[in-house]
Structures are given as structure tokens and as C-alpha cells.
Length: 188
Image (cartoon, rainbow, N blue to C red; front, side, top):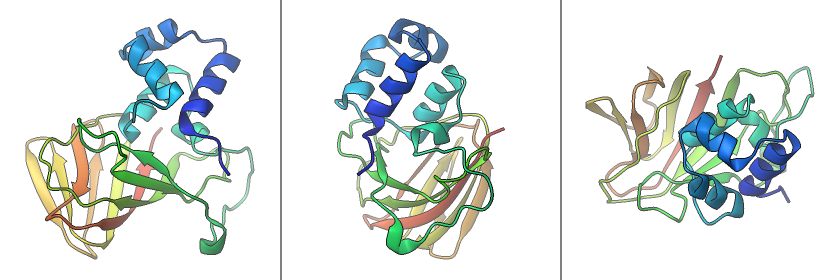
């Protein structure tokens, strides 16, 4: 079983001798929020995790079972474990998005491919995220809404979208349906 995300963040932060106060200054997040992430009482988004990784001088993959393995990474369906859950709504504590990393055994990568299961929701207060990099999304099933800047794009099975992640955005299920996407996040 994999180590909980908060435990990984704390372990790496302490190993790098970074205090919560230092990380708060580097990321702009409060000490209370960061402490809540580490103890598991707060949920995070992928964008927030990317900011924390950058504040620690790491790639986001370091928190998602990263390794130093070189060569191709093969992700076999039968061998995949559970994903990491993230919040999509500002009032969510349940983890609306479940991220299953597909290249967790590959060290030195710049792309993060995921299968993401998105829980159905009729909420309208989705948390916007922004971070350096680019994202590509392919809808495997369901209907997905992508809020991007001032626009909203509705994507059906087989549709794709590619965008600059620095623009505030949110990816969530549309029309109260569960959805599944293939997402590739690129960070320089």
C-alpha cells in the first residue's frame, strides 16, 4: 500500500530541512493549510501540489511515487494500485478527483500522465487552479467541463483539449455524470 500524500509531503519537507514557515513563504499558502495537508485533514488540488513541489525545488511526481528508474515506464492495468484523491470544489473534503499516475516508475520525466476519475457533481463552486506548464486531456467516458479563463468547454467522450496551465482552470464532471479522462501534465 502506498504512503498517504500528506505523509510524503511532510517526510520530504523534513528531509530537505524546510520548515512549514519557509514553505508557506515560498508557496503563499498558510502554515495552517500546509499543516492540514500533511496531517490529512485538508484536501489539495493538483495545482496546489505543483506549487508546493516547486516551493521545495521538486517535480510534482516526487509526491506521486516517483523513482529514479530510467528507460521506458510500463503501467500494467492489473498492477496499478489506488490513485491519489484531490478536491475539485472549494467546499469539498471528499476528493472529487482520483488521480492514477501512469509513469510513477519513471525518473527524470517532464510529463505526468494520469487516468483521472471524476465524481459526479451538481455543484458550481469549482476551485480554479493555475500553475506553470501545459495540460492535455482526452475524455475516455462521461461528459467533462473545463473552465478556462472566462470560457467553459464541454467535452464528450473522444474529445480533447490542450491548454496553458498558467491560465486559471478547473476540470470537473458535467451534467451530474461520473467521468474518466486521460490527462498529461507537462512541467518544465
